[in-house]
Image (cartoon, rainbow, N blue to C red; front, side, top):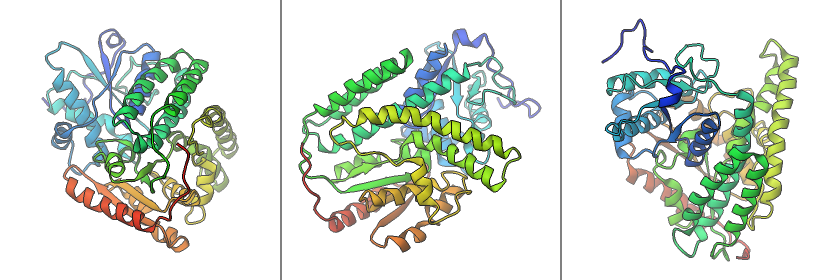
Length: 428
């Protein structure tokens, strides 16, 4: 039943739970869930990634999470509830894990939303952990990690999964044997996560093998397809079922999809801290300036190590650098605005335009105010500078019609096919 409001978190993750509880990790993307699962295993916790949300999971999220709460919260909590229901009779004991970061977004409120949903769905005995290691709310006193070790694995892992996902999207549309690229992806993701747990050198060696494997796939890329860039709210952007598998749909309709790098999403604080210090938005300006520089340099080291190896990939193209993205964004907005995806949306679009991409999808949960401001609100400024580009906003919620999404995606497909000039052949 529902707990008294005096103690909404009656069950807490204690030290004893480490021995008999498996932590369920929800999805941002498949590769990100695999990275988080590996990271917590590296800290001695039993973990499992939830299955990507299906219709049942979406219905559970809609039922047990207030329907006014944004779609990503419903997706992730629905995934957790679905997993718990599927394994209810197995005798297994679980805890659930959620992100905890910005306080002005659902990512700052997952624990409260999930507690209510778990209680009402009959899982009042399932504790919650979050990535807030300081745990000021006291909901997971038994959850402890080596923050430095975990953070280094996280940064390294982001660079690795970005590389894998990029190769995958550049290869799958051109495969001769249907399913061969997906099969290699599944195999490579598992091997890269195992190697990452062994150490950075092992991960880079495995990445070399993965690049060679992608280079050897049988493909026909004699003519490059029109490209479409997808940018927006991070979970809808990357969650395969949360965005109704739009990448697969676009590929099936003759497009190649480009997406932002997760590693640069997290590296954005290197820019944010510098801006906050310069504008006087923080009390200790010198500290923020120095910390931002160190923070960026750490990311730079691992990004460069991966990029050096990625140059062996036969269709390597450098991804947008966070400082380049910030510079581009500052042409059309004040980058001190950093709520939600903030300046990343226009900055990434402008960077992609320079790379020759002219079709864009801006995806967001319905009613996500910060991303509507930069997703929709900044489009006119972008189109004033680049009138030839197509920018289509797409909103998602639990009742979004698949037919409506496909109809709107066809606008991008038809527009790109009619506007794109023939590209020079690329050797296969």
